[in-house]
Image (tube, rainbow, N blue to C red; front, side, top):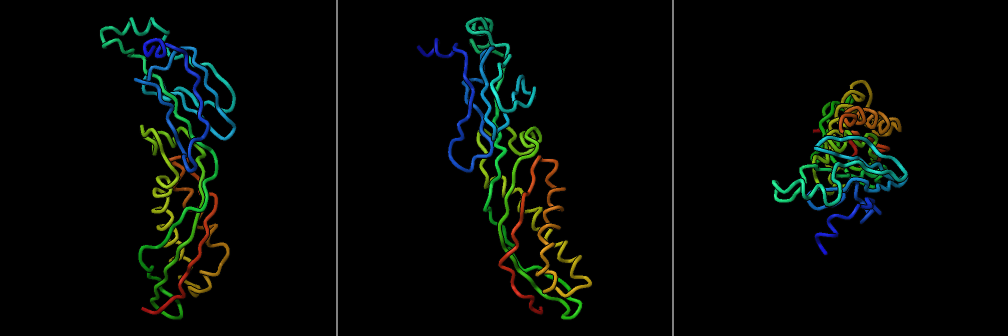
Length: 222
């Protein structure tokens, strides 16, 4: 029965699994997706079809037929020299395009700034942010990198570094000629930081949707 089941044409789909999953790899033993397998992609996902180690195409909402080179039964017989495993490897990675929210960030230590009135001061902050995947191919290459499952917290960890760097540099630039307290109360600060972070995240195919800057300590003199 196991041998027969292994030769059946696949119906490849992702129902979503547990909350917070950003990317998921469809499990097919030995990556031997059969020729003619049906791929079902939902509106909130993008599927990436990988054949022979290369991304062949991004697949969007709808049902598609996959051409994998693994003809049922024939491919197994043809692969007898490889232990009856087909050398034609094909896999599908699903990437969620949903917005992932309420992810936390915070300064590990107070940030040193130079207030034009008070002189050197220290400020700490924390808050939340949300993100989404905007380039699934870049995301698969840069961050998924073969992992069968990627969750939002893993992605968030790769965002926190750029976010804190950009927040620190923006605070330093803005407070050069303005009181630090005025800068911290400026509603445009979060938008400026988000725009800068998104320039850093373009390569791995991510976008920060919004940043909440809260928990700010009042500047205190060093």
